[in-house]
Image 1 (cartoon, rainbow, N blue to C red):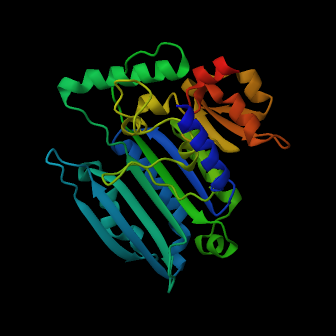
Image 2: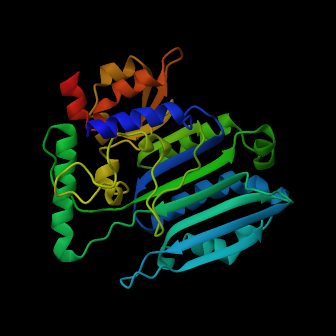
Length: 323
C-alpha cells in the first residue's frame, strides 16, 4: 500500500491534466429510470446541439448495445450532416429504451476538420449479476463503503445510473461553431440539475474528454485516476475490484466521481459532509433537494477537497485517522 501511494504521488506531479484547461465539459449522473431518464437526456443534448442546424459538417455516431449473455455487443456507426441529424430516425432510436443501448457517443466535425471539436454522449451502468450472486455483490459493495468510511453501510439493490455529458474544445472558434460559451454551459448544467434528480453533476475545464464504462473497457474520470484507491483490486481481501460498481446508484450516492469549482450533489452526499466547513469555502444553494456547490472567490480547490473529504474516492477513514 505504501509503495502504491508513493507511486501515485509521483505520477500526480507529472500529470497536469487537471490543470490544463483544454476541454470544457458538463456531466450529470442520474438513476436509471429507463424512458423518462432517456427523454430528459435527449432534450438536454438536443437543446445544446440546436445551433448546428445552421452549420456545415458532420456528426459521427457510435453506439453500443448491452452485452448479451453470450458476451456479444451489438455496435453501430453512422455519419450524418450536422444540419439534419436530429431529424434522422437513427438519432431518435438511440434514445428509445426498447433499443437497449448502453453507450451512445456523437462527435462533431466541422467541414474539412481533421478531428472532432465537440461531442455528446450518455452511458448506462453495465453492472448485472446472476440472481444467485446478486446478494453477494450487494454485500461486497456495502462492505467496501463501510471500510472506506469507517462506519456501517447497509446492503442496497444494484441499480445502474445514466451518465450524461457534452464537451467542446476550449477555444473561441469551437464555441462559435457550437453557439455556446463557458457561461452558457454552466447555465445549462445548472438548469438540468435544478429540474432533474441528479446524484452528481459538474462543469469542468481540464484535459479530459468524458468517457465512462462500456463493453471494451472501464473508464475513470481524470480526478479518479489520481485517487490512491486500487480500482482493479479494490480494498478488501475478497474484493474483485471497484471498477464494476462505480456506475451503480449505491456508489454514486456515496462517492464523488469528480471535484470541480462548479458542481452539484444530492442530499445523500451532502449529509455525509460537515456543511459548516463546506460553506466556509463554497456557496451552497439548494434546489429541489439537490445542492449546487460553487467555490468562493479566493478559495483553492484544495480547500474544497478537504471540506468534501468524507465523500471523496479515497479511504477517508484512514485519512482521518492519520490526521
